[in-house]
Amino acid sequence: MDTGRCLSSGRAQRGPVGWYDEVPMFYVYMLASKPYGTLYVGVTSELIRRVFKHKSKAVPGFTARY
Image (cartoon, rainbow, N blue to C red; front, side, top):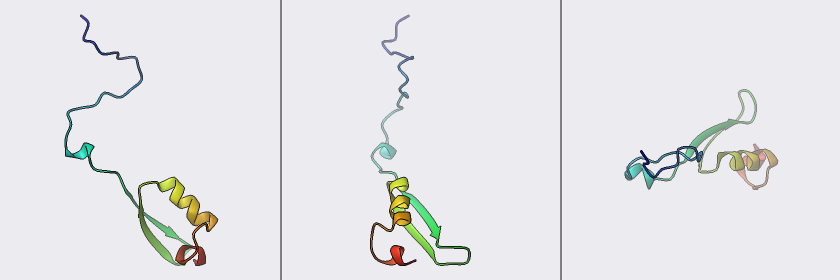
């Protein structure tokens, strides 16, 4: 019986469309400068890129100082 779907394509099957398909994903993250140091809490949709910016001090300001 042919259902018209290719199950070996490697793509995930999507369920019915709901409100959660429209909501962007964000991460809340916490970083510390050192043990018992300054604690920074942030929100981003691109976690790996944001952590890289913190570590490389790419953005001047609070996060570059601490």
